[in-house]
Image 1: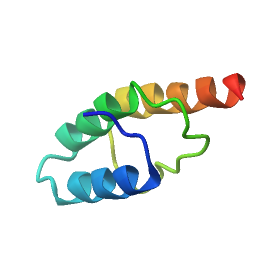
Image 2: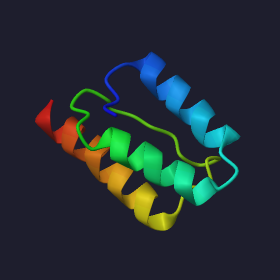
Image 3: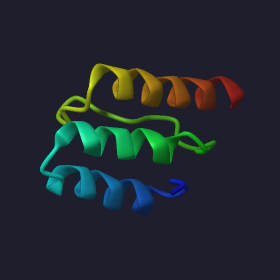
Length: 68
């Protein structure tokens, strides 16, 4: 799964919210973000994803900002 648009992000966040295992939802979000090249901001404060997933997602966002 590749997240490319704001709608994809919205859907993915809701999938993570509905996921009974928050850690699995964070991993799903992390995997979806790995190919993203356009997202410049992402607020993970209330998602309760693991520290590993949060780190990887923030790294993708930072790389996107640096590329811009």
